[in-house]
Amino acid sequence: MFWQESDPETHPKVPNDVVDVMFPLQKCKSLPVDHAYALANALIDAVPWLAEEPRTAIHTIHVAGSQNGWERPAHDSEQQLLPSRRTKLGIRIPRVRLDELKTALEGLTLEVNGSSLTLGSAKERPLSAEKTLFARYVVAHADEDEDQFLRRVAAELTQRGIKIRKALCGKALSLSTPTGPVLTRSLMLAELSLDDAIALQQRGIGDHQTMGCGIFLPHKGIEAVAQAAS
Image (cartoon, rainbow, N blue to C red; front, side, top):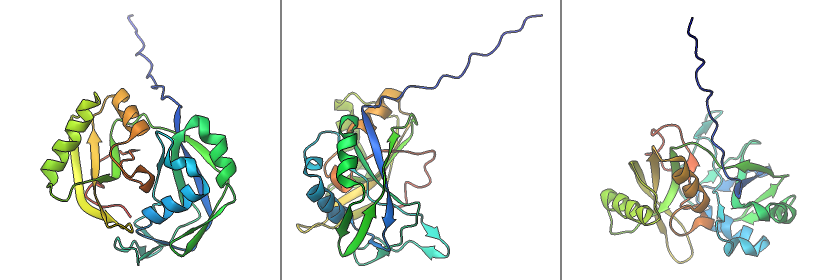
């Protein structure tokens, strides 16, 4: 009898020099849907080095599209999200800053556009080995259509040595700031190499990463790309 066991599946090792730090929201009744600028300002006021530290990004707070009969409202600074007990605030930082960030933010109450939120004890979350990534917001130019946006992004990533095989962008969405709106598009990149997927998560793409722009998350399909995130 000839019997050969199949090779064991390998689990790719993901570097831990950049991690997400996830803070549960202990007290937060509501939050403006369009809160990226206000959240970034509140966090940078509390931890000034977030504005200067390379490879740092702040995730906007995201909640389910519907829950207990509630539907997420349109993207508008006047509309409110209703965070649940499972809702978390994520900040992507170099791991060497982990303890410093936790010390600064755990138990802190932030004021975000008239809403208050209190941060609980944080947990570290490693980057993903998933090879399909999704960014809710990537800064776009007002004078470019979808095809021009994708070509520009592909050219920028090619200059960084990142090979793009499949890319799909979603509808345009504006983030409010005191100096005017920041135009963005959602973006999915599929069939990346592991090295490229890690590099994208570590560095992101484009400007305004403390406002949640250019931050890549693991994604298992393309259906959510056309839905702009809250």
